Image 1 (cartoon, helix red, strand yellow):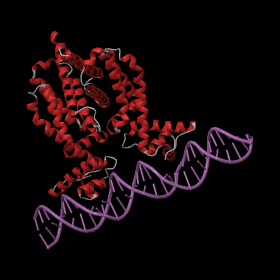
Image 2: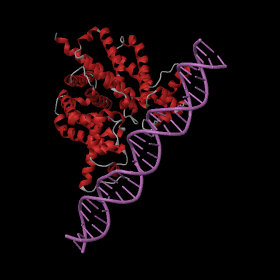
Image 3: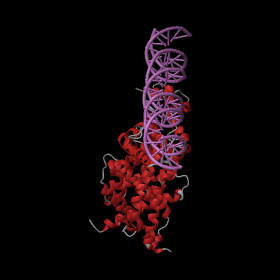
Image 4: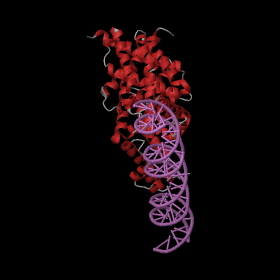
Length: 206
Length: 206
DNA sequence: TAATTGTTCGGATTCAACTCGGATATGCCT
DNA sequence: AGGCATATCCGAGTTGAATCCGAACAATTA
C-alpha cells in the first residue's frame, strides 16, 4: 500500500526516483537496475522508494507513464499543423521530432523504449497508438480523397507499429548502415506510394 | 565455466533444459521463470543446469539460438520458390508460415519473441535479418526491373524490421481489431504499391 | 576391475527485493 | 512561538531466487 505524496517534498522525492530510474536504466540496463541503485541516484533510501511504489515494477510503470505523457504532449499540439501537410512531410516531421525526443538527455527515453516496446503491457503503450490513430483519422478527414482508402484500421496498425518500432530499432542500432534521413525518406515513400497506389486502384470502381 | 555436453545423456539434459525454458516462459512469463522451475520441468536439478549454463541468461541465449535456427531452417529452403513469386504472394507466404511457426506448441516461440529484446542483444536477431536481406537481394536479382529501385538497404531495413515486429505485435495483441488476413493483405499492398510507385517514379529518368 | 573423466545432485552462499519500527520534518492550531 | 498530528524518511533485517561447490554416481578406457 504505497502512499500518495502530499507535501512538495514528497513530490520531489517521487520525481527524483522516476528520473533516477531513467538514469540507472540508461547507465546499467534493466538487469543491473536495482532498487538500491535507483534510490542512491535519487538521493533517497530504499525505504522511501517503497513508501511511494509498491515494487520495482511500479517505478517502471511511472517511468512509462512519464514517457507516454512526453510523447503525447509533443504530438498532440502538432496535430492541427500535421493534418494540413503533405503525407511525406507529415511522416518526416513526426519522425524527426520523435527521434529528438528519444535522444534527449543522452537517449534516456530511447533506452527505456527499447526495453518497453517488448515488455510493457499492451495497454500501457496504447495511449500513443490511439493518439496516432487519431491523427490518421483526422488526416483522412482533411484530405477527402483519402476516404476511399480501404482497410484503414489494418493500415493504421501497420504504419503505426511498423513505423514506431522501425525507428526505435534504428536508433538503437550501434552501426547503422543507412542514415536516418534515408530511413525517414524511405518511410515517407512507403506511405506515399501506398496511398497513391490504393487511390489508383480504387479510382475506376465505385 | 560451464562444460560442453559430451555424452548423449548430457545432450538430452541440455535439450530438456532449453525446452523447459520455453515451457516455463509460456506458463509463467519471464518474471516468474526461475532456474528451479526450469530445472524441475526439465526433470533435473539446478546443479545440472549450472553444469551447462553459466547463468540463467545463457539458458535464454540457448533458447534464442534454438528459435533462430528454427526460423532460418524454415525460410532458407523456401527461398528458391519465393524469389519466383509475385511480391504479394511472397509476403503472404512468408507471413503465414512465420505465424504458424510462432504459434506452434501453444505459442512457445511467440511468447519468447515478445520478451526477446529484453535480454537478447541486438546481434542475436541478426541472422534472421541477414537471411531476409539475402532473400530481398535474391528477389531483386530474379526480377531485373527491380534493380532500378533505389535505397535498397533502407527499404530492406524498413520492410524487414517493420514487418517482423508488426506481426509479433499483432499476434500478441489479446483482442485484435483486424484479422490476420487483413494484416497480411495490408503488408502485401504496402510493399507492392511501394515497388510500383518507385518504378513509376524511376521510369522516366536515367 | 581400477582409474579417470563426465554427469548429477542438493545444501550453502550471495545478493537484490521488499518490510518494519522508529527517527525526523512539516504544517496547522492556539 | 510552542506543541501536536501526520507526512516523510531511513536503513538494518527478512525472504527467496540465482549461483556455487564438493561429494556421489555413471560411463568409458585399459
